[in-house]
Figure (spheres, rainbow, N blue to C red):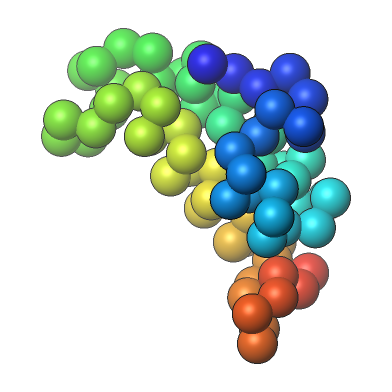
Length: 74
């Protein structure tokens, strides 16, 4: 289920990430949702949603790092 707005993101994402990181997460999730619709493109038994969340977090971690409990832009 792709996210249309930042408000639609999971509470765990909204509560911890700054707005820009949330935007990265949303765009990466939606892109991965489309890209990994086919089970053959996913690794192992991961669901489409699980795969999209993993990719979204990886995208955030590319531009942000967690320091002392806060996500800081690299």
